[in-house]
Length: 301
Image (tube, rainbow, N blue to C red; front, side, top):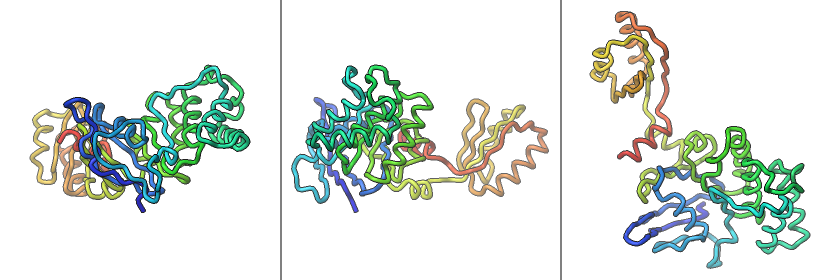
């Protein structure tokens, strides 16, 4: 069942269409990753969906929601959240809960519950100015779900974090996706593969790929071999593109990448050539093309 349906969504800034006629749906209980290069229109799209930016045209419809203002059903965390640094984490969450019209007693209880959940229980009374980047991002997540939204929208939630902070936030998102629908943008494709059910790839204001992640990988995934050789004859390397089992050939920085028709046939043939040529093999990997491969093809098309 769809939670949100978008039709013909467009945002123009002067003569430039930052977002140009997007139509898509977000299913209830799913996690969708929004991907795309810088300038693709991701942040503009998220701001329109969250009610922070007025569309130039198009429709945004919450299924089963009669109110014209849908912001009460949405939790939003921008890429660079701002805080009242003179407040403690507890004070900030109670304040945002009251802004969401939650009664004071319930606000205090909800703030306490979320601070513990996001791992800030021991820092609840510390000033936010003393929080690390990861702690602030976890506080931002708590703020975004304080009112139990139907849809949680996150703009690059881990892009500014160190590896430890990123891992902490990703673990929290895995928990939260069990309770609410999530739409998040990211440049880190591994994160999209790790937690998302659906992906939408944007480029220059348009959707270029959209759908169930696993189905997309089944539809677009291709057998692939990566070879790192230490003493390869350049003529032999370039000649690989003419092998009957090779669909696509790429050679960069000493790494040969082959998309092949049959992994078994390609492996047997290549191993024979390694022996005949006396090549020193530094690396040999077999597998399927990844979300990164799909992403690069989509945005370069």
